[in-house]
Length: 265
Image (cartoon, rainbow, N blue to C red; front, top):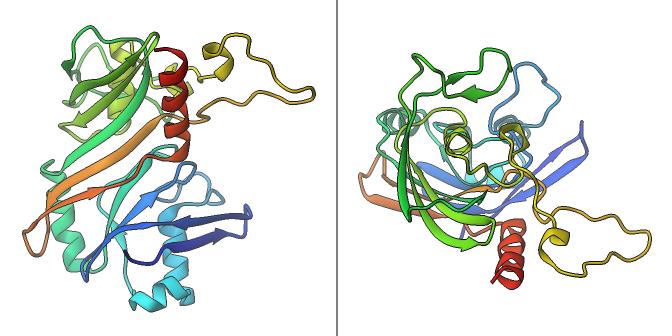
């Protein structure tokens, strides 16, 4: 396994040690953490973003960049601020152009995990609903009554826990917030996705006779949108060999599912 990428933001005093999931001379796949933008926010340059931190690290000759002799990194797809999992980067302009073509053709298979509120009645289901920017709420998407861009997602129920479900989600198109808004539209918002009505999950909701130690404040089991890109499958943009890149479950998702299994069986 390639060495982890160590990044820091002087502005926010945050530090990340990001595992590499796959690497060759053309590509680098990272296990993106929650709470980090993929690309810079045009309205707030102070917010840390993965790509800006990577480019700064390359320019500064940081050990992780120097060891790889990196002069270039670019992304052909994004993960939302709170979403974790596989983020695939190109190490050359040639690889980036080929990778961008692949993602624009929507050929890569992206298997996400989502912990949602509610229990879908069918084990497998598809949501085919167009998406558009919300007319009143900046930064949000919606399913409009008319027009909108085509968006389609497949879902599979993996486990159910009384009022919650663990789903495998496969977007067949690539639109901003697609999985999140499709699940909200279907009545199964993602746990912790407060932008789309997904309430947080608390241990006190699951465990009978739950008590905190004096002076302690309860924290949610998962304090962000419970969405994780677990698997990315695609044809290598240069060699054409099939790649399957997998990101392990993040700790907060593992903990949430552990307690759901323990207290809602």
